[in-house]
Amino acid sequence: MVLWSIVAASQCKLSGKSSFYATRSLLGLIEGGFIPDVILYLSYFFKGRELPNRLAWFWTAYIATQIVASFLAFGILHMEGHGGWFGWQWLFLIEGIITGAVGVVSYFYMPPSPTQTASWFRGKKGWFTEREEIILVTRVVRDDPSKGDMHNRQAITFRKMWLALTDYDMWPLYIIGLTFLIPFTPPTAYLTLILKSLGFSTFQVNLLTIPSSVIFILQVPSSCIFVLIIVTVLDMVE
Image (cartoon, rainbow, N blue to C red; front, side, top):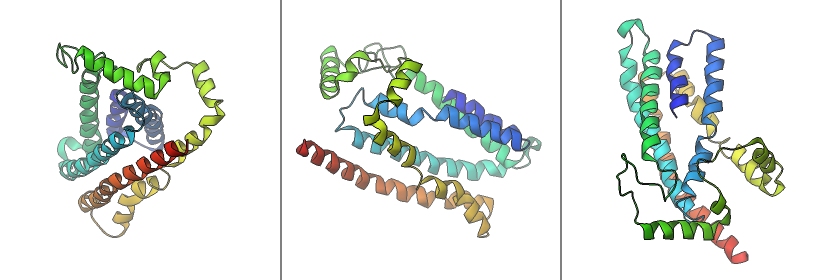
């Protein structure tokens, strides 16, 4: 988060196609592992059947930040001309700094595992008692034995990456992971341009992107219920 916030903030100095392509490529490279790692991180605290509900909250928060960002953008873009900068330059700089601050706080606030919650930042006693830690770890390992020999902050190696790529049973999951956002991404990416072409001002465009985010959030609970039904049916079949 800190690295991509630096890249995001540096976009305030974009000066042409080369710098645009460079920063966008770096953002994609650095940000690419964020959501998979969030899912992995949550899997150390919750069982597989519990994850859809927690991920629904994650996606809700994820989209809710876009609503907040739209309101921020509406105000920040009015800084046009301050310091000789355009409004979009201030937008990249300020939102990049905010993201960096969240990244720093997250580093200290998010524990590596349920058994490592005690720290000066989170409290010397931690979040759970020893008995609660044993229960948390036991229930997760019983649900997924592979969690017993892996640490959440364990570095990935080329050998492990190769083993993952050649695990044919996982290919359907990889295909879903690579394609599930395809229907959602183009409308999101081009919505502002479409609204702009319809004659709305830059300020109006930022506010008009909010309804789509609200509709997405309202659909998340139904999607979560659908996933839980599928998981339950598959368990019954097995």
